[in-house]
Length: 313
Image 1 (cartoon, rainbow, N blue to C red):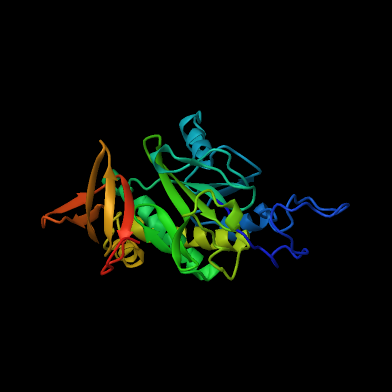
Image 2: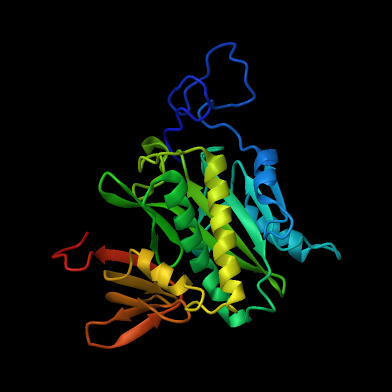
């Protein structure tokens, strides 16, 4: 995942991403338009007594921040990291999404990070399935505020922006259990990917969506602060999605609702219908052509056409 134009954020002369640096340019940055994150400043802003975030590490490169953080929990010999540990990578070489999909992106072209959460005992395990949806609400809220870009949600775990009048995926979320009492949430967001760097035509980036800010430091702070607020409210409500307003907020920002979709389900089964609601378990409710309704809890969803549209999108 990547993005295109970070001009003005580094204070250096602009050049096309990937273009060679001028001879003799003295800098620790390989790409002057993609400066590294400032780990010290991020810790100072986010890690504080009484707050959710307890540690924040930035590594130059790794295969997957989710895999690394899960390993820290499951392999720890009596020294598992506390809730609120944040691991950020400037580059992921084996980033993972749902259904074991993989992707990679140019170094420092996006935000690639994972956080460790321990929702219990305040939240029963049967409600932990709301965490990726909650993370979607938090990420969309934080990006909309900090980047000035309308960010919507595609059920269950994609972040969408509009590029040249079309919806494009600019981010994704992956939740994984870590041991018996922890969940690792991974979030990947394309920030400065240029059109030529997109892995697929349906991908996008904040820069391509004409974000007012593509500086990754304030973007990461905004997303983590938003996640802290939404997670705190949800946990205080015992994980109740209605009381914490997570269910309402997700539905309000969900681009999937009101559209005709095809749900590709496990076991080579598919359903086509109108996405009409999000139920109390976070499942997508489809109104089928025969009048029946079915809740989908896992699978891939393809947007076929907008509500009221005459043909495919």
